[in-house]
Every structure is written in C-alpha cells, then in structure tokens.
Image (cartoon, rainbow, N blue to C red; front, side, top):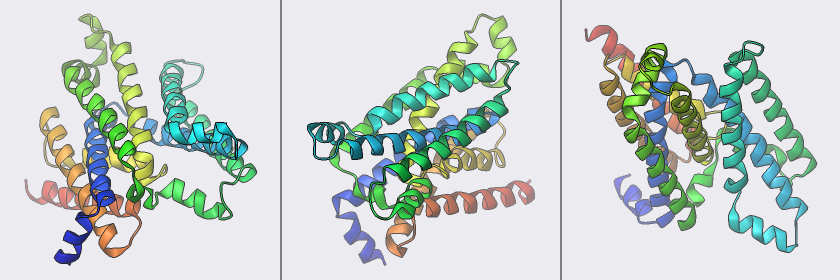
Length: 290
C-alpha cells in the first residue's frame, strides 16, 4: 500500500488534489468556528445550494453556445467567473435579509436554498451537458473525481483565493473575535460590526465555491461544522479551538483524499466520513478525558 501511495504521489494531478484539498479544508475551518459560534452554520448550506444553481446556469450557457466562439471563451474563463460573484451576492443578500424583521434569517435561507436547488435541477434537465443527467447531478451534489482532474490553472486560482482568505482572517482576527462573542459590545466601542459580518459572509461564499469540486454542494457544510464542533469538545478558548479545528480539518481532508485514491471511494464522502470519525474521537476524549 505504501508503494502504491508513493506511485500515486508522483502523478501531478494527485499532488494538485492534495494541495487544493488541504487549502480548502484550512480555509473552511478558520471560518467554521466563527460561523458555529454565531449560529450562522446554515449559511454554508444555503450558499452551497445557490452555488449549485449558478453552476447549472454556467453549464446551460456553455451548452447554448456550443460550437461558437462564445463556447471557447466560456471554457477559458471557467465557471467560477459566474458562480463566484452570484454566490457572493446571495451571501450579502442573506445577511441583509436576516437582519430584516419581516423575513427572518431561517426563512430566508430556506427559501433561497430550496429555490436555487430546484431551479438548478430544472436548468440541468432543460440543458443537459451529457447523456447521463443523473450522474451529473449526483457528482455535483455529492462530489466526484473532478478534484483529481485539476489543471495547473485551477491550482493557481485556488491557491490565490485561499491565500486571500487566510490573509483576511489573520488581518481582521481581533475584529472577527469581537463580533463573534459580543456584537452589541463591539458596536458600543465603535467597531463596525455590520462591515465585519459582511466580510465574513463574503469570505464564506468564496470558500463554498472553492469546496464545490472537493466534497460537492450538499456536503460542504460538513467542512465548516465538524472540525469546529470537534475542537470545541477539547478546548474552550477561541484561539485554541481555531488552531485545533485547522489541524483536524487539514488532517481529515488529506486522509480522506488518500483513502479515496487507494480504495476508489468518492472523495467528498470519504473526507466527510473522516470528519465524522474525528468528531467521535474528540467527543469521547472530551467526555472521559476530563
């Protein structure tokens, strides 16, 4: 098995998959602690459904532009040019709508997620990209081997966006900490809580789009939630929980990708299974270790 793993690691796209998987897991875990503590975990699930709908629109545009110069332009720029801005826009709208007393946050996210999921599936039926519609939908929702077909350009984009997310989190760490634990007090001392909540929403949208190829749209929330709640079983301070969450998330992502390559299992489901196993271990340690 070790020889087989070493052989696979010599293949460029396997190395690309590991790098992208580790970076996505790292970024997800950084924001995961804040989202869980602020009761914003539902945002990840809702935005993933929005990303599914926008991905279906991008695929429909490519089908409609078949054998035309527009098709080559779409292929060159990639789906992310369409998916990323629309997902960020929906993140901003969710944040603003959640603050409106007429439409509560949970109702807004339910309306948007169900609507985007249904609309995306409808678009994929009208403009099928292949003869296997069920396989395309399943791959998009639950992840597929697309993480193992990354090109150098995809790697560069992912690394660049991941670096931006990490820099933003580190630079605004104190402000994010303040609005996470006591938003009212943060406002009282002059902190622009709305601005930093907006930054959190935008960064979350970026992470959602990056994670689509890794675990699929329906499993993205697992990357955000499981490492955070696992770390909370072991530690109590914000910094310690964040560091532990990062370590657990990166380890589970790398282990899940390696296991999926060796065993031939779905990448996304294997990573989530590793996160669930890590949570079970942390829960046992937290319960009996004290």
